[in-house]
Image 1: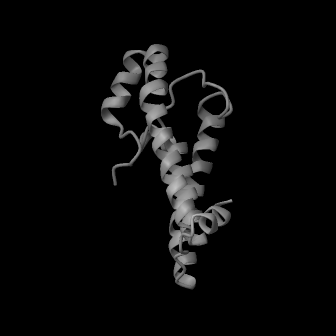
Image 2 (image 1 turned 90 degrees about the horizontal axis):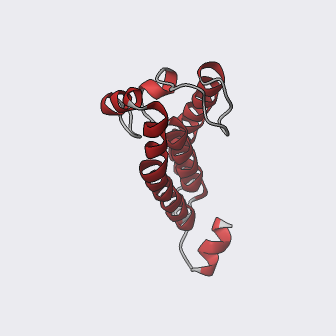
Length: 135
């Protein structure tokens, strides 16, 4: 779909031989690993699966580093795939969807978490970055 959109919009592909693969993998691998770490934490600590709300506030594992590890993992993964493909439209669409996801998380999801978990979530929110982990 991104390739078709690139052709339709007459966007040039940015291909640099193996550079696309290497740079893409620098995003894909950590993105996938972070997303899998999130899934493992949901099962082990959240008493639920990622589709359903957890029974308790999870602040360990990937959640100790950022409040939205699945969003971080997905954003990195899809950005890497877009770079690997050398597709300007894929990069643009990835950034658009990442932005929409951040807006949803900030406006809707955080409000719900504050309602469900109260002061525990407020304390967690104050000490833990939203998306970009402290290094």
